[in-house]
Image (tube, rainbow, N blue to C red; front, side, top):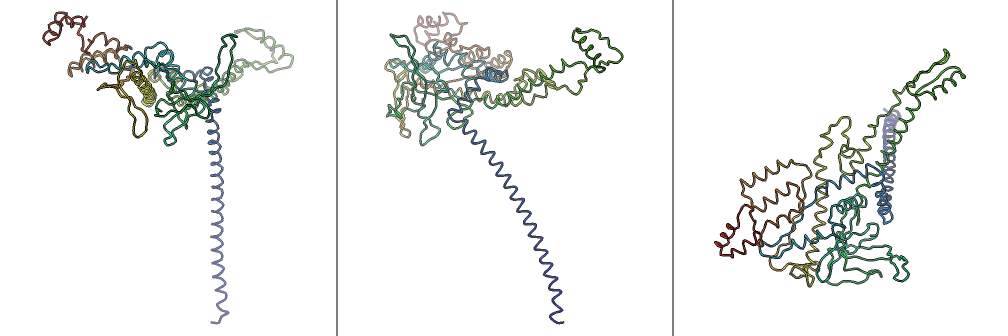
Length: 517
């Protein structure tokens, strides 16, 4: 076979390889186009997320946070569901009150810390601003609209008595953090308008001011007097309570509910308009022009239940509405989103179990809701621990303070720490009633059974029974049933028994009888 005989087979083989390569190139080109299209979609979606991030960053500026807080405050008054959501949350958190106790030192013979704590809690001005029932409701709602509560503490230098007030969250424009620890605030900047009345002219004058306040936990050994040319008020430390934290500040619970509250309101407005239009367009007249006009005039002047007489050429029939009605329950998913923003069941938010629910469903809290409300209670627990810790410290540091102790400097943080003299205990016991309503007879029976089997101390049994009965001032009642040494006074024991017991212990019987009275 000659060379020319191999050429046809060689050409055929090359053609097959070229066809195969061409097919692979087309496949690769197709996949490349698909990849490019996918990348284009990815970048388009990524640009959308970037816009969301930029919008969020803009909303979190001081001006953006102020606009958001203002809108939440307005909606908390104008929108029924936002108002109800905030009110329900405040009720679940503070509606049953909170019990706060500190060691009184009677049993151990140490200092009475509880008296200092109770005087702070019961002070009329403190109750009005922070510790009272009305203040609790307002501050919890403030967390719902603003996301921030700034408690500023003022102390009387001689006695160490502390009073608490709150700052407007819109006036706090910046927080200076520890450069080495972004979770540790040092100073709060407040930009506000100060109003004064002239003594001679009696005219009101205003001026813009800027003041820095130290954080409650920032207690350096060296204190600067000025920051950026503005004064630092060391006599008024601030404790910051925040929720839904983004960066340095918190965001109100109502912020997530705003768009859905608007949508639900618009849905109900449209539904009401449709129902109104359907109720007005009730009849349809067909016939000659003159007959139809006469029929319309007679119908307009006819009251309910009247009879319309038509000529043979005019037909009167009701407008069909079978396909034109819209059920108001169709907007329930929008209300569900509002309820989710507040952490509430939609049945609780709407005060209506709906078509498929029941009354028991509307009145029962599920576990996630209970945990969320208890979580908010724990936030307030930490707030009270921090503030009352400062109250105790000031009672120690003041020259005429009721508590004795001193200060030490932490070697790691270089911050001052106050300690009580001797072995005095300053542990706070903060108790919240259960959110779920347990029948009183069930709780009392459980306490009685526990006392019968475990032989609980009488004071502890009385404390548990008083809490089960819903008594608020438990500590004040317990004080009336204890002597100076913290021993329980049994109301069933006579004065003679008290005197005999005191004589057997080697004590003064007369003094024991007087303490028992």
